[in-house]
Length: 404
Image 1 (cartoon, rainbow, N blue to C red):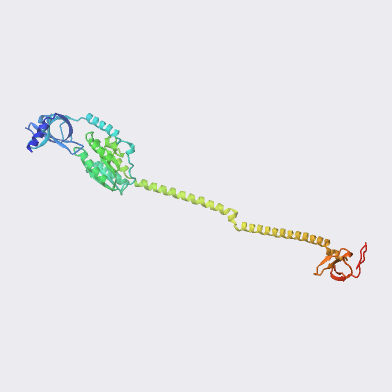
Image 2 (cartoon, rainbow, N blue to C red):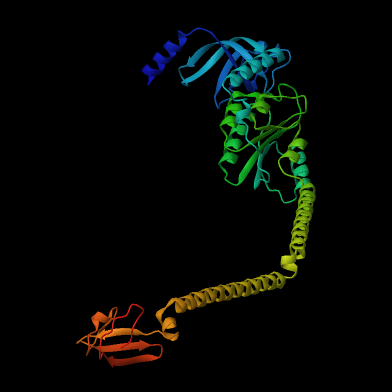
């Protein structure tokens, strides 16, 4: 172990001087001692280192060094062999002025903006009525009071999960980041509010810290920034999903106003009632217009009219058929009379007769000449009302006719 410690001390002893920036968390400068001890802490991480320097250097600082002061030291790393501790031996201490702080914040602002952490597309809409509101603020602070009172006045049933942290000093950033992570992991928390009252640039410096800004950017829950007054604008305002000018404004923005929402519901209900009544009135008028039409006012009249029309057409059809039958019957009777007039029966009724030769099979042929009927020929004579049979006794020829 001694060999390792000695080699580490030799290696560190070869290092040159460095400029280190940090936040003072502890000062030990007793009277009568020539060496003062400072604890310098990284505000963005849980890392600290002991700094030794002449006591006079500490006492000569203007303004005097206090816990939370940001300083830049010019020092050489040193390794204490006996205790195995690394420290810095400072030969110059400079307080970080407002101008340097603002310049550093401006550089960080440009860096985060270039990475897109300020882009409007990353901003998430706050829930209309959050289940639980997470609040990160100082213990028993005016900011906590303003957020709780104003939110409860607007929506009495709102629920809060409050995380009290340091809002300035060396412990502010780590506690803020831890509280933010705890609220983000809580499934009941729908929105997170980070609130603090006004203060100087140094007091609000933790809310422009890079670690906090990146933690807010990575947060899955919408974050509301309510830091200081209207004129204060730390980097957290640009990264958060919503920037509120004051904690009071944040209390009004995270929850709706129950009176306004009740009035809005009443207005929507009235509008819906009027719209429904208007629709019913329109439909009623339409039904009345339909009912006033003849077809619906007296639905049997069209049926009766159509029935009468059917009866009329049927009668016309029967009349037309009967007339046609009568005409055809008349034509048939005329044709029949004509046939009767032109037929042999009419001739027979006038005294004529048809003489036929009787064959052996009983059939007869019309006698056309006396030569066809020698004596003894059996004849069948057809007159108007029947048939008689005769036998030829003699044959007589005559140019004008004859008889047998």
